[in-house]
Amino acid sequence: MQFDTFSANSSVLASSTLPSLAKESFSTRQKSFAGIISQSEKMQRVFSIIEKVAKTGATVLILGETGTGKELVARATHKLSGRRGPLIPVNCGAIPEDILESELFGHEKGAFTGAVSSKVGRFQMAEGGTIFLDEIGEMSPKLQVKLLRVLQEHRVEPVGSTKSIEVDVRVIAATNKDLREEVKAGRFREDLFYRLQVIPIKLPPLRERGADVKLLSDFFVSRACERFGLPQKRISEEVSKKLANYNWPGNIRELENMIERLVLLSDSDTLDVNDFPGHIAEQSSEAPSFDFETEIPSEGVDFNALISDYENHLIMTALAKTNGNKKAAAKLLHLNRTTLVEKIKKKGLETGLRGEIEVEVTPDDVDPLFEA
Image 1: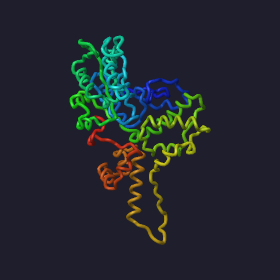
Image 2: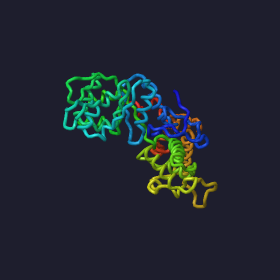
Image 3: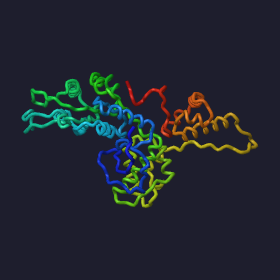
């Protein structure tokens, strides 16, 4: 897999490129894939899929929560495709239905009131390149039919025209909706769904990307300081812990916006808890710690509970040290992997792992990124 040297002008949630930061402001030893910053194992699998399918021209459906970077994946796929044409993005949820049809397929002069001249649609603009249909789940049933025809015939028909135009365009779509449920509810065409999800890519939320919270936080601090002309700042260890323990419902976009706010409002060169938003502090929870007595008190101890707590502590510590890799954690504890997995399930520790460390995914597990 080919990686770019990580620099602070790497794109994370936007396509615009900022001036590069001074080398000492951020570690250039970090890596990015086509402008996407991550060390998460789940994201490495996403990168692997992108690398495999980029040059094929196959239709891609990107799934994921709001703010997970779906447009970035679309841009990376187009960048690596080698297609000569441009990437043309269309937000299907932000354009009214009557206007969206014209935006996508174009229109002829006089086709409707206000059509004083002919207009080239986005599909024609993307000739030889890629069209990115964001929020595809918001598209009306009427337009879904027309889009299905374009995918089948590779031809578009402008509004008000009786002639169709052949187009060479790769389609990448994205949504934060569960399209299978939308199909069941009758809001999304089943035949279009299967046409779109030739290559489905599911992006993990930030809370499942382990150390990426720290990696991205440092990046956003450095970039914000340069953007606003401020001296370089750093994040305190206490704040880093709170960031790692927060659930991030808005994902990377929420993290980026919060970091910018901290950078602008902080009077110090270190961002600490005094600058920290209250709502995040309230929802953050520290990982449980365990204090073990060196002496048995006069009232005695609960032997079984104490041993169980210590065993939990060792398991969680080993998993944290190996970034959730169960095989490596089992090796540290001198256990078989199957024994460790059984203990995790029996003790109910699986829930505690989510959002705190990156959980290993093996071939025996269900693949959350590549659905049939």
